Image 1 (tube, rainbow, N blue to C red):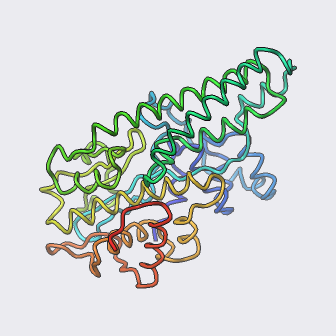
Image 2: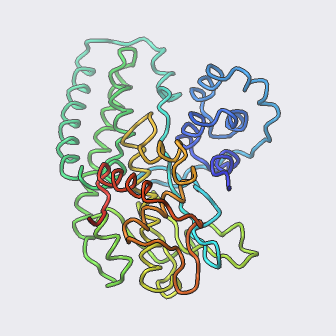
Length: 363
């Protein structure tokens, strides 16, 4: 089975949050993570605390080139990391799901630490004003979130993890007045972005293309998930291209979107539905992870427990199969997915998970 965690730990472009999540689950990969260019000081210290032997093994890990600088923000922040390059199809067609896994909240950032060591001026008017401004922003943010909390990708749209980090850090009495003001400004920025995303979603809820795939995405995301038929430029090339396999779908977080090959290349109606539902699952799982903060999301926990062959891609297949009430991954003579047909018991687990995260699921 393709080891997605190992691939991510070896990929210089893997973001810090993904590394933290892997570190929390995979002690065997700690040496690789320690040598990764995105391994930040707090994560390194945490690994040394829980796995002292990793320090000695670190020298055995292959060196990596520095990670490229992040591209300018557009939509929700963060960089994409591949979750499985094996693809969704086994015979002739491959779908690679690009997802973001929620990060382990280890502690404040390096910038936070540097400011917390400086003298503070507690009780100053400037500090009080900043805290009051943050409280006002938090109230507005909560009101906005209440409008979308039934959406399966609400935690992603609202940058829940980032806002919670700001909320935790601004309460640190060791911060300088300037740092408190900075966090208040960050809270305002998150709230303004959420406000804009809600407004933008209202204009993106109609099936402009009239296509099967866009209709599913629009119904699922209520305008918060975009769709584009640009998999050839936005999705990674299959590592098994020499076997004639091609990538026909992936998802991104910047912007929040499903990227597909043109529908004419996806196969018939059922094949198109299976492909887009599989990819949407990755976004739901990402949102599930963010909603749980430092703990594993429900979907990740089920996979960790060994359901769905311990494979997140098989979990995505199972969501699509359960949604469509199908018992095959073969359509129009081509086999899609990862070759595993989930059991009735696993389908019930998927239904319960879908209800928990508000993911669409026919009765």
